Image 1: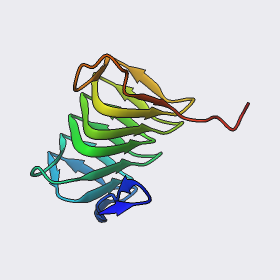
Image 2 (image 1 turned 90 degrees about the horizontal axis):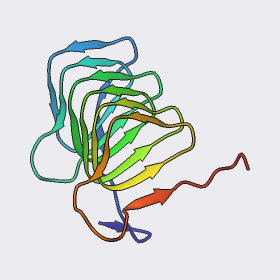
Image 3 (image 1 turned 90 degrees about the vertical axis):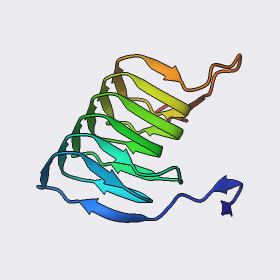
Image 4 (image 1 turned 180 degrees about the vertical axis):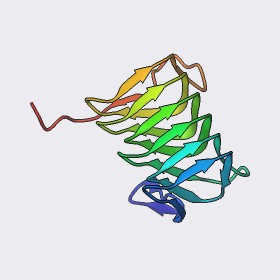
Length: 133
């Protein structure tokens, strides 16, 4: 479905709440929001559109893969966003990052290699506007 010129993200149907620690891999369909901690891989199941939100207090220690990924917490491990990766101001990633499109806000930190999924002559990088200027 198209919503104001953009594809509408899938609904978030699952939540790992603040204070919750998951030991092991997590597979999800459609949307998942993490407010707690996951010690294992977080992977979207299937080929459909998926949304993963890692909130400000959340921590993921493992591989992350989904079509649309929004990070404002911490990810320690490789990350792949098949469509769009949004790095919010408090995002911290320790690991290599693969993306189709990247939106990175001021304050976000990546300790690893940023690499587009498809090599093109034109960079797939969108600079987020800063309200601090």
